[in-house]
Image (tube, rainbow, N blue to C red; front, side):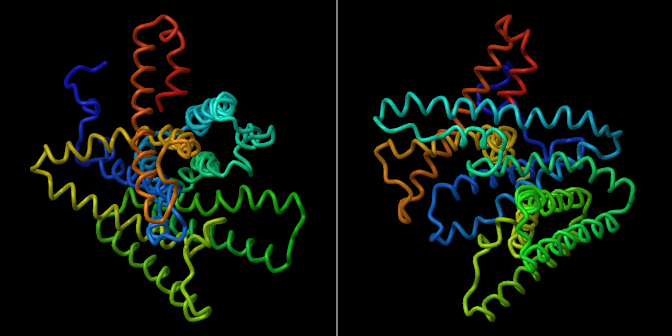
Length: 380
């Protein structure tokens, strides 16, 4: 373990982004905002106005991942199979470990609480394979599908050589997706295989893949281009909002276009994500000469960002069993209680998990022999 400081997060020192090879603190801050917004969505009521406002969270996480992916592949040789061999296990192995614990732990908890076991065998297999049923795991399916698509995106970007052409390719990809989606709706195509493949896979991998590709573009964009892209998607969002208000007499929430993601939902997510990117960039530069204030904000954000998968998984567990605690549950006036409680305990348990597993790896023969497995399962 590093011993420079006793601070829990001090092993991750903040640095302002100066090149893709150095840590881009802006992305850590964006991912921190994203994971908090996701937890908030699960602990608040859809009737609450903040529930609708935070509906950029998944888009922000995907765009941030695209930016980080661009940094890791920029000006470097890229191996398709090597990337998938590393990325897919790092994503899916912790999820499988958590799902096994999640379903197994429900047995003793059910006995102690004198409640029937809440899951079926179908729930377990659907959770394990990230399909249907277990709604909290759908976002993992999104990131898995995008991870599989991302090598094709980087190959396409390098082949086209210019981000303008790459952006056009993403646009055509999205237009093709919307066209197929419209045709299926218009002609009422209900063939089980076609409907299932499109709904569970294509309708997520294409829109979020385009968001991921946009993140790759943003990673190489200057301030002026970021503002232009922001303006385009702000215009699209406002235009859709005005049209829905004029056509229906009321404004439609972006949540209505989330499953699967539509342009109204995506335009809002992109607009807010780029706005936040510009804001955190401004914030970091303004506080450049006040390192002690940056450390207070940035060091925890780096930990949360690099631990976002396990924080998300633990929040599922504590969200389910929060009702057993003597606090109000998910009421419109008291949503901050479960939000703050579940957020803090999920972060703390993740910190303890990483600290304990690190000690096992360093101090035990078992840990040293199985360090790669333990790192993949519990430290990523």
